[in-house]
Length: 224
Image 1 (cartoon, helix red, strand yellow):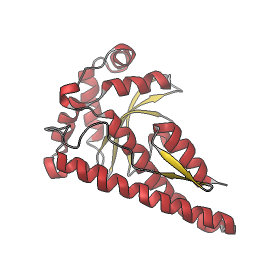
Image 2: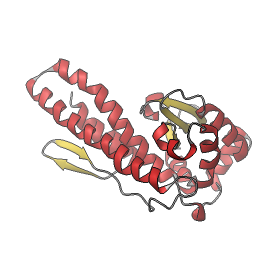
Image 3: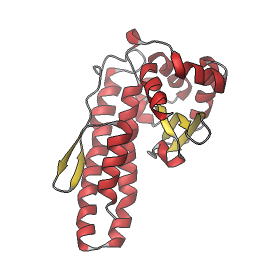
């Protein structure tokens, strides 16, 4: 029941392609570099928020995940099934935080590089929601319902062959709902509070100015 190894290789490696290195039999995770500077998303997201969000929060998820990996491997070697079960929640939470944030950084682009959706992803949005404007309205309404901490998502359902708007609690990855993540918006307060205070609606309105539709479209093409 090598959960830690399977989780690291499959979830973190295949799902979002984050860098990783193998140490003995463990697959440990490392903080992915951003494809832009901390200040590049201004004025939508400040450099101060990005520095804390990426360098502190995301890094903490990775550190705790790697520690949980080690404890899990030790418990597995000892045949301590109770301890292995206990650690699965920490692996899910911190591993989910790593997976979700690694997607989030790629989903964003500097305002100067913003391009509207095109090609297959645009066609899918128009088929399932009518227009990009309607998608953003429905997405924002759904994401605003997140109480406490969680994520707003645009995902693809392999079963229904369509786009789905949904939310996840805490750091649960979208794969827990059987969906492929295309676009994720972090609704934890650390993602926006220093700039938008408690006005989530303003944060959600502005985030669409920096969505990396090329990345979203590439994820959609791969998911089909």
